Image 1 (cartoon, helix red, strand yellow):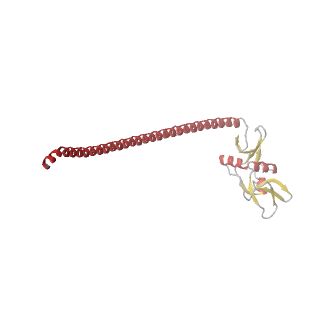
Image 2 (cartoon, rainbow, N blue to C red; image 1 turned 90 degrees about the vertical axis):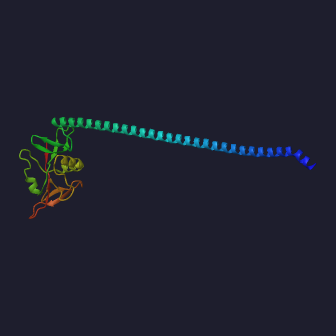
Length: 238
């Protein structure tokens, strides 16, 4: 009877075993499929990140290229503007130089310009309203006593003299312009240091001199065994 019972239960046992085996296989397959899907999702995500990174890098590269091109164009425009401005300045300077030459050739001068006509040379330090008449200052200077400076014949043909007090004010007013003109003409710049410059101004036994820039006169005893010396600069009225 037991044997018959076991034989009778055997199909159920086999069926149960089959169900267990198939269940285990199904669970394993399900886990495998889940793992494969997870790996596929991770691969897709990694690929999407790679594509996004490539896109971002490409956008950054393109942005850098656009920036570099904009900088290049801006620099090119700046250079073109500078070149245009330089050419315009040069053109105006040439036109002005030509106009100045023509003006001086016609006999009209401005303060600080070199007067150079018929052997008469000097730096203009005063002019009338037209510029046709004014006063010149000698290009060079000497250190002399007052009487040595006053009696010196500076030019054989044109009668130069020492500056007056009125001339002193004009020289002081335009000192920087005059020195610029003197340097340009190859003359000696006016010094603002001692021993100063003689003026054509006497007061008894005293002569007067000035230091350019201080706007006042000083006195020196002219008649003595050892008279003072100062710079002498001469002027001419044209």
